[in-house]
Image (cartoon, rainbow, N blue to C red; front, top):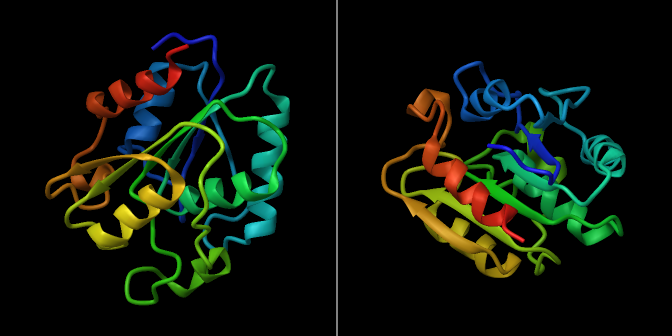
Length: 180
């Protein structure tokens, strides 16, 4: 995928393993920039926001954000606070940071989940059997954020463990956000 628009990859809690689609995409296109957080296992919202802000400010033009899991919440928090423009966001498998039944206590600092319209186009990709969010809650996020919702049947957490290595269908969704 060749794009003049900067693309920032935002892994979620715990980072992502080498079989995760985000790593496959980065290996296939070195122009993609992976946002590296200081602490993947004890995430602090303010720290993650500062890191994301630094990466966005370094972009020459507004980037597209490609977020997974906890980083979907990060993007929603960023959109509420930031003035630096973003072109769009692909928000995959958003973790329900408000639910102690679905997410670990370590992510509770990202709660409450912002439920405000994002000021840029976005696509939420959710699974019918994601252990970290119910389908209804993912739909609530998509509706509140003004996002297009794409629901995948039995895709678990849409990660390497669920068999989503290169994930070409995800690249097609990203391409939709990169269109002028």
